[in-house]
Amino acid sequence: MKIRTKLLITFLTITVVPIFLIYISILGLSSYQNRVFRETYDVGQVDLSAGASIRVFSHLTESIQKEIEEKIAKDPEIFTDQSYLGDLNARMTEKHSFLMVTKDGKLIYIGNDETALSLEREISDYAEINDSDSWGNYLDKNTEHLIKQREFELADGSRIAVYLVTNVVDVIPEVKSMITEMFFSSVLILFITGGMLTAWVYRSILWPIGKLQEATKQIRDGNLDFTLDVEDDDEIGQLCQNFEEMRIRLKESTEEKIQYDKESKELISNISHDLKTPITAIKGYAEGLMEGVASSPEKRDKYIRTIYNKANDMDRLINELTFYSKIDTNKIPYTFSKINVANYFRDCVEEVGLELEARGIELGYFNFVDEDVMVIADAEQMKRVINNIIGNSLKYMDKKNGIINIRILDVGDFVQVEIEDNGKGIGQKELPYIFDRFYRTDSSRNSSKGGSGIGLSIVKKIIEDHGGKIWATSKLGIGTEIHFVLRKTAGDAQQ
Image (cartoon, rainbow, N blue to C red; front, side, top):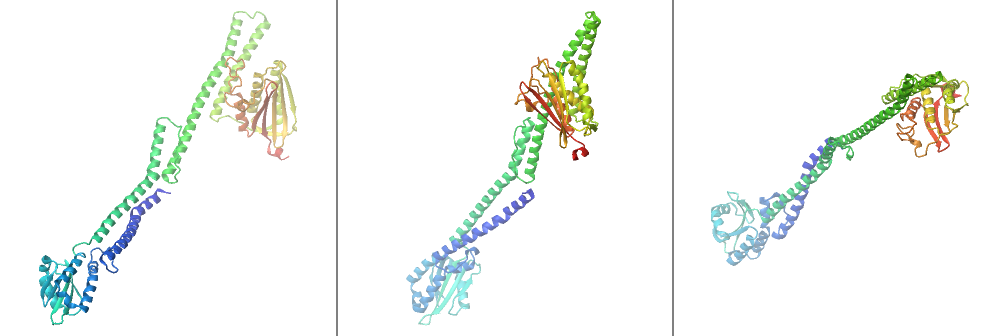
């Protein structure tokens, strides 16, 4: 839900909901107090929601009016009986009213002396105005009293006037109670609505902001190992989700940097270690030549050849370091072209065969593809792949009669190259990691095998950049096979 929608809901909740609930409560309280009013004062239907209106006060003396009508019809002389009039006035007092009676214009009964004296002149005026045998309703000049007047004639010809006086300034208890209950119910509704609205706003807006603030403090303190779990779909929720994605990427970037620094240090350590061996040999043999230790031409040739080979080893290590930096920046210089598979691998085998023969390693070459099969590849980089794989095989060759076999297979749309050796083999637990940077099955720094630890990772990178795939199979004590595939050119793939 968008924040704009939440604000609209908040506005409606603040305005419409309390008004509706207060209206419902007023209806309920009004209905309840109306019932109490009717039962208390024995009146008919009345609406207290109008407050202390004249109509409400008029209802208070309805039952007294009915009784007076009945007495006039049956026994009008009773209105000269002070005892009856006192009883009638006592009952009217319960209804916030009092009784006044005149006979031929003179007061014969006063239920409230103080008020009656102030109304005596007005009553006489009303008597002159109203001479009919029906009830007349009047307000005094100060509109403080509702006066109900009824006149009738006795048997002796005298006229009796009955006045029911109700103080309309006072608020009857039921109305007071209803007003009080309405006030407290309105306050309660406002508090409950405000509390619910506050909780909702806090949960949907303030709580995510608090979580976001805590997350920023965590990042400020260098801690990226936390989760910002805000799943709301509003703007703040989306901001939190974007922040969480940023945290994940920042963590990944930090971990990559740490891993890169670690790998760089390891590479420098490996290169330094591996350069030290040929440099030491070159220095030793060069000193031998300078001091005349190599006295015969054969010995001098041997020393020079060794110096040359060690210099080549150093050159190879430096090339690997240079190539490693190109891998990290994705700036490997590829020159792709169509290559005839049979001719290319035949030349590669002839080139590496001389070195393997010098080391006493038997090389087998088996080509099972047609002479016209072509692939698109970088000839120089593919040569690096072959040399790195064979170099790795030689590094871990532990047999006296070493064997390396190269097989070229036709597998549908691909050409599959297999390079097999009969070295020490690789354990199944280690096999999935041999293409990782700096991974060595023999991690001893005193190992004579040397190497930077990035040879096979370079191979994997080159093959994948050619759109191919590489994997390995191995058995301990038997040997290892490296497999990789290259896609044929479009014409060859269709055949």
